[in-house]
Length: 457
Ligand code: ARG
Image 1: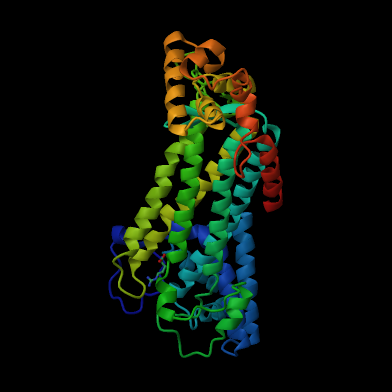
Image 2 (image 1 turned 120 degrees about the vertical axis):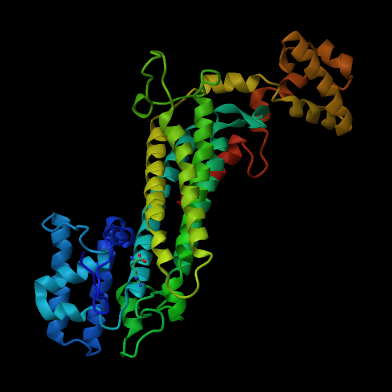
């Protein structure tokens, strides 16, 4: 039980209370950030004359050595230490002696952990952003291939109007693009350095907080209020919220892949590399990856709600409740990253059944609106046109026919405005290609939008 604070205690901590309190089991993943922050702190203390040049150099050298030893496996982080901060300081001191005991001058674990979490989150933002970029590139390449792949568009999961696969996937491009934008936004707001805030009230040492902020690449300089500095986890909540949105988007996409991959739809075929079988039913090929992504969404939401709840009752400044910011956040970051990666792999290898999508778009009266619009163009008021086509649809349902299968005579029985050109007007090709409003699936328009997307990436 190695602790940094034994002086005022007469008795040892209860064994199980010690374990309950300790965070090394999960905060050891912050070792890089902890060492990086400590190096900046030592450099600043040296520059300010609070440490001698040789103390500073031996601390920095020792920290760098420790980092490479952890990375090579020469040193392992063990749970005999309370947390990663205690581990780093204690091992450093064992190795370099007296100078190591001076590293914590003008610093508290409160501003230290605030810094570590910020650095870690900042890096995770970049990793998530990169993963999203790859996903967007994948979506865009599929879109480029499928500007003329017709499929039914749905509302209420009922066939509504024909669209193209490019158009459908474009909706996901928009979602994940907004997600990246949100990450950028978070990064801007979290760009200030809490180091030097001390336990809560700063310090009487002459610290140069601008210098440490600069060394740690915080463009916004040091945080402006020391109490807020040690108790702020807003950026982490924002990140969890952004991850929740990413997961929500991935989950909707997964849901569609699952539906499209079902025996009833067969719009897509998931590659063997991203599907699994059944232990009992030999015929099965299950979309487990998509289902897991959908399922793991709840877990990421859980992390968000958990941290919001943890933070809501904490009096200023630091309270130990805040140690609970780590486990679920780390889990959410890992989960979201893995989900984006696996989903992307699944998408890259998935086959789209152009023929079956098109066949499906031809059924289900997806051209009914276009039939009504045809009448409107011939001078029939839209409400009347709607009702005329509604009756034709009913006839089609009763006789098992598509609108395209009705004879001109049958059309004209409902309205004399129908002429021979109705067939052209309601053909699948016309229905898609004439949809040329900005943002609509018309292939000509779609290609313009795809060019814009290319530039956006
Ligand atoms: N393990 C702690 C955490 O994650 C580090 C800060 C401890 N500070 C303290 N005053 N006990 O929040």
